[in-house]
Image 1: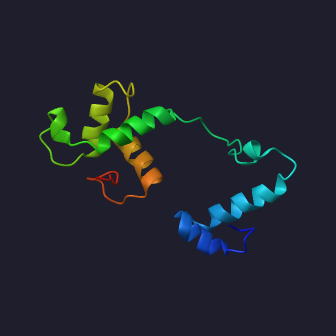
Image 2: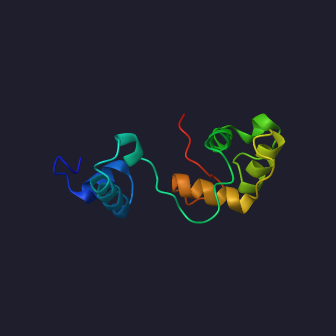
Length: 123
């Protein structure tokens, strides 16, 4: 889109990301012109500890959060972080996960401000 002359802020709005994400990825794209496309699109190595959960585990937790808690014998109408974390462990999706870490992951990935409804589910 940037090569087509679309402004970074318009790209960011269309992709629902921050302007700096567009700036960073566009700069990386141009800096790594001599590398294959697949490598240019890979995230750069980062400092810090590796992710604690796989993408598959996160997808399963997100899918679970879109289910009704009543379907899992939970006496609530909307998932709380604690209930969802408990159910993810019960279902064997993860060995353990804290409610606060689960909330952090879901907010980061879905930009949801609510603590009682952790993700926006379609349907």
